[in-house]
Length: 251
Image 1 (spheres, rainbow, N blue to C red):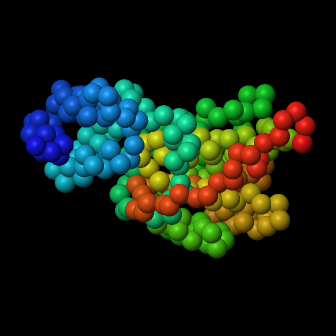
Image 2: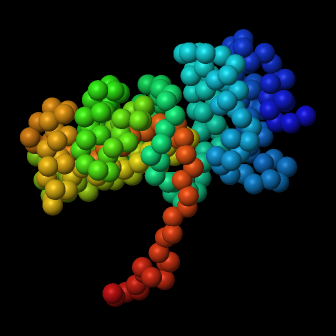
């Protein structure tokens, strides 16, 4: 019996209650945690091979499907998190998304990860605008030639920074928060892409987004991050070798 059949035979998937969710998640955790000496890393390939998301969505509908899916994801994250180094190494920019809405508690988890970024003097100048409205996303997609896919994502999170709060390093702090956001999305099985808006050589990018989202003058627009369930598998990118980029003691 394959993994899919074992999962389905563990109980009637169409009539989950909390105990049954926990039971199924416990089985899932045993499949993933490598108790028999297999690789302990949770990878997208393992999740895909077990077809868990497809089983859940095909076996129920609407808010209930999302409820079950989020219970599963958070259980896995609490019991056997994607290794941080592996998440950094395997993250890719995703520009094609499935047309599936993201639950609010998943978005909340993304923002919660972003707000724990390092910040000079702990000023935390970041703020976020969560854009779901299709018409607003269509306007954001017109920011520049690299933002044209924004309206295809279920959610676009715009990263802002309060210049008055951190005049010397607001953009650095916001960049740290953006990286946390990208890594959190990858860790939750989502796809995302960093779209730069703050550009000293092209101030019209920021001006456009500011006008669309009604951002006040002292709040700077740093980036847009479209997020959703990925509908592509991005190929690995070449990275410069370590020996090309390190120096010891002096340049």
